[in-house]
Length: 120
Image (cartoon, rainbow, N blue to C red; front, top):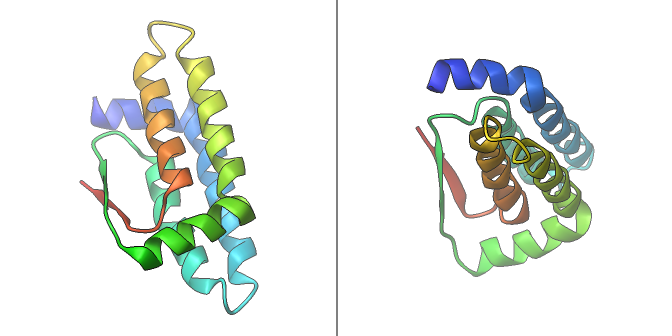
């Protein structure tokens, strides 16, 4: 399912979400202070383009928690809502449920990207 799922995903929703993550990453990289956040966005853009076969593990400490709070205020909430809405639309059909679940995985990641890592 990984290769075929990623191909279908890219056509029907992954391109929009991946480009959104790239755009937010570029906007964060405009400022020198935001470069670490932008680099994190670029890492997760890869997941947004090709999510099948990858898992996200969460961890981190106080620093990650504080960065996640700032992230929610300055861009993460919009990405989370986008992924949740697209996931809800996918889940309207039985065939789209696996794609909707991938959207929900990305939506959760958009709420808490710091301290998270993507595993193959």
